[in-house]
Image (cartoon, rainbow, N blue to C red):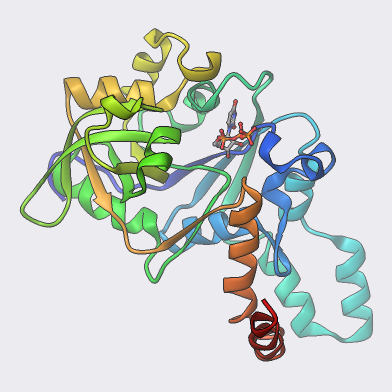
Length: 294
Ligand code: UTP
C-alpha cells in the first residue's frame, strides 16, 4: 500500500432523502426499503459493503425511516417460531441479516442535501478514509464496487469516485468530470460540476453511487455554499477537492440501478427476478411469454 492510504473499514449510506420521485409509495415506505424480489434495496448495499471487507456501516436516516432499523435488527418472534418448528435453515437465514457488520444510525434532522448528510457522519469516520454508498444506487457486480475503488485509492492515495459514461441528458441531471486517463485504466480528475448546463459538459463521465472520501472533505463541505436545489451538494465539495488536490475516477464493472426512480426499481426487479433461486425459472418462463405480447 502506498501514499499512507489506509484500508477502508467504514462505510456511510445516506438514506435520509425524501424520495419524491417515488411518490406516492415513499409517503409511507422509505424508498431504500422497496423490495428487489424479496429483499429491501438497501440490503444489497450492506451486502456489497460486507463483501468488500467493511466492518462498520453508518446509515443516515430521517423521520419515518424506522423500517430500515427494524430490518437489520433481530426478529425474535420469527426466530422463536422457526426454532419451535425445527426450521433451522430458515432460522439461520434470518439471523444472517443482522450479522456481518456493525450497523449504526444517525438522523439527518433536515434534508438539506447529500453533502449535509455526509457532514452528519463526521464523528463516525473521524480521521479515517471512508466509503460513501448512495442509498438509492444498487449495483450488481462480480466484485464489490467499493473494492474496485479501494484498489485505486490505495494506489494513488486520492479520494476516488466510481463513474460511468452516461448519455448527455443524464450528465445534465448528475454531474460532469474533467477526467484524464492514467496508464492503468483509471482516470485522474481535476474538476467536476454538479448538474452542468449543456455547454458546461466536460466529459460524459458521471459519478454513480460509490465514492471513497478522505477526511479533508469535511472542512471543504463546511465552506461550500448551497448549490443546486438550494441543497449542500457533495459534488460541489468534491469539485473543490478535485481542483485543489485531484481525485481518481474508476469506470467500474457492474450494473447500476437507480431504485429512487420507478424505472430503475422495475429493472432491478426483473434482472434479479430471473436469477433468484426461488423465482428464476418460473419468472423467466412467464417473462418470455409476456414479452411476446408487447
Ligand atoms: P437523491 O437526490 O437521489 O435522493 O439523493 P432524494 O432527495 O430522496 O431524491 P428525490 O429527488 O426526492 O426523489 C441521493 C442519496 O442521498 C440521500 C438520499 O436518501 C439518496 O440515497 N440524501 C439526499 C440524504 O441522505 N439526505 C439528503 O438531504 C438528500
